[in-house]
Length: 283
Image (cartoon, rainbow, N blue to C red; front, side, top):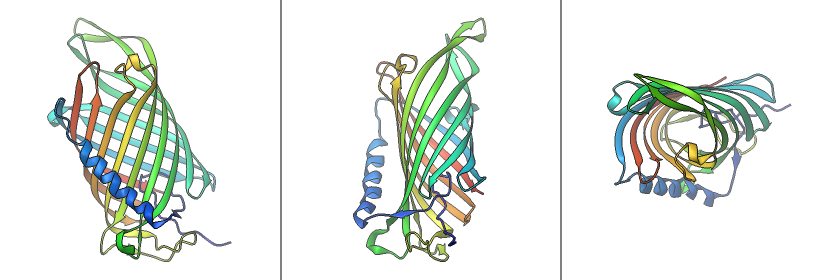
């Protein structure tokens, strides 16, 4: 039986085979870039500067199953203190080399402010997602292909109901909200990157080592229980540009800038400028 040489998933997710599509689809990356840049400026928003550190890990158990985990530490404005800790384990199901489903749980220990009192209270989530990855020819038909990943994630959120008692926050049950997220991420190997062999599905050389550029955007929509969030369908948008280094098929390190626009209640909104450092592990 032939062994497929797969290009590691640019999202840090499972390592599917990469399907090749028509050259015109490469334009999607440049359209995504334009939308990202256009979405960065929001003049009527509270502005904060924060830092995020994250790790995204996948462990393949069998041909059809594997484990997923990501953990993130996020700061408050001006990098003053920890704002939230996110732990998100899951179970991967590989439908085919390019298409993967995941179900999991998320624990978010987050700073909250109610009645002028600040405290840390957790949110719990159940989530499901579908991930599809394919190859894109680089502009001018370069020898190796960029890759594009699409992720659709559904979240069932259990948001704490809080009230202030003295100097403490007291939890009084929870509210349920449903949220849908669509994520697209392109990874472009830079000049001088190494490749080995050829992918048996596409004939393209897999990207195995070297520098890469990453561009991504994710949009969030409240599909139920929006009154517990901001009272709106639109929740937030995250646009991200990064440069990284792939040490081998199993490990990437990247650093980049994220612009997070959060739509609050009424006319309130927040625009976060985020420095993010992330690692990706695929075993």
